[in-house]
Length: 332
Ligand code: CP
Image (tube, rainbow, N blue to C red):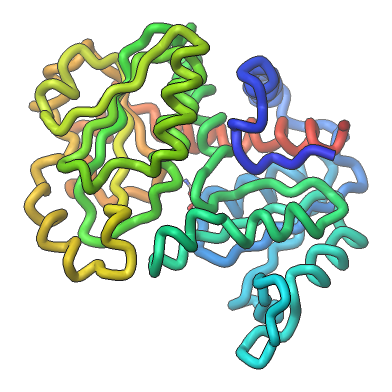
């Protein structure tokens, strides 16, 4: 039984098949592929798009979604193996995963980092605990990566640009007043490399580099698919000739748990905003963001509301590709 935890567990061909099926479902949204099936959606963090698109997608294919969250009355869970459960948790993930598997056919998990120590967060403990103990396939709905967003992103790019091999892809850090999850940045880096693009990671300083695990996977996959991965801290060099600009903010990994030390560094780089001046340096690039996004902080209204922005298409495609992911996992 395969889970959908990360795109690096799946070949490019398998991922393209899911994207193609997503495109078919975009044309013909309703069917019975999930007739009588139930997906449990466990949200330990907020969501607008993921929650709605999975719920609507399951229903459009004849299935049913159950949304669970701590604020919705779920028992607090323990995830540590061998824990002596004297703190707040009332139930261990082992029981939760096994019991949900008796009721449901798929389990989706959203569990962001705790932002205290990256060494701990990078283990992705909650996702892997569910994958280990569940008897049904588990879907990553964003933990320290966001593979569903990756497929929606690829689908939107292919809709606008056709083949992606050889395109110049800029993943740019952008300012945000708070330190955010690196998940979407990790994912964007990996999927752009896997689809054969020449990827540039633009970030203010080396403290904002992504985890070596994802840098290494991206470099390996770019090599295997005719692309490349490079890093720059120079805004002009990053934007020059880009075909695609993907914006995201994230917290600097060396400062996990010491965010008061990171803030003065990030506050110096508000000039990383995606604006029309920077976009003018590109090859008439398309631009996107995973959303939610702070307007005129991450990206200006002019760019976001302009004809080159495909963020709404990408958000819509979450619905279509996730239906393809769910049917792929159910059919195995
Ligand atoms: N992009 C994304 O996952 O959106 P939500 O956080 O609203 O689900």
